[in-house]
Length: 374
Image 1 (tube, rainbow, N blue to C red):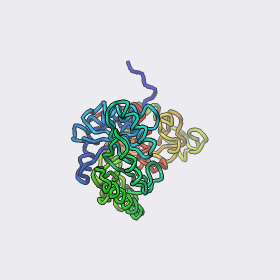
Image 2 (image 1 turned 90 degrees about the vertical axis):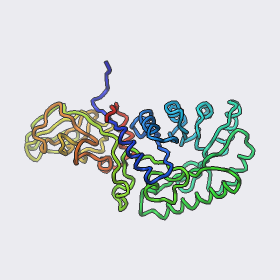
Image 3 (image 1 turned 180 degrees about the vertical axis):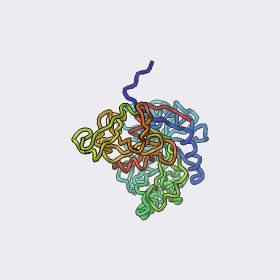
Image 4 (image 1 turned 60 degrees about the horizontal axis):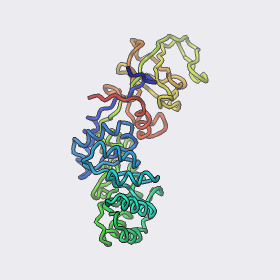
């Protein structure tokens, strides 16, 4: 018998992820699903198997270790590590599992050359260039020097050049997307002029839907795979219509009680009942990654109707107003995220109440025990 630490479950629909992948293919010629960070909390192995069955032949993970698990799960896929090698063990894993790592420094190339020579096998790499994120990668003006270095290496071969867009999901910053796109095109031109037959990869989810110029040879959809509309709340939101949320998160009512007017609820006495109220206690809290920042702001779904969070979210319990659902009873299922019908809690809504983004909603709530459903 399995014993769980909590009463919260993340219900994952891999069919929705596949549907989103197929929708993305209507915009992008060669999308490589990004399933880093345990597929944004949806489960790397399960997502990878479903996407490979749907036709994905190139996929991307985050760390080299995660990429090794992805390669073991889908040995027929070309697997990219977006973070590339960081510690000494990563270099051996790249060789052992035939991973294509993102590489953004000369030191990484030299260490990969050593590892590949020891392993007696060539290594393919994706050259990562910084075109405006100021994060990882070679500088945009270093393409010639990178080509020089590669000419002296016998076991490392560049097969891809990549960069990452900082504002592809913000229509008001289209100009910066174009700046980055121009820099990347210059990098590709310089590399191709040196005889490097590298594929270009720049487009993320927002760019796939909104910036065709950035598509190049390989596109990297992430949040859109899991149902997050990269243009939610903007004038381009229609481009992501039809994406299906791949995750519901559920718990249960553990107590129902009637509270008289003037009574305070939960820690800090931040909520006082304005009248006699029927209140439900839901078995979810910040220990389950349901943020304390949602106190007094969020809504949940109970029997198809929205109920407000009252007072502060506790470690494993949260109070809600049962006024809209007078028939609610102990044991009822409560949706923290998702749910059936038109009142389903969207990840974008929960992110707004939380003061964050859909990526964090999925990654954190997806750390709860998962169930896979149709």
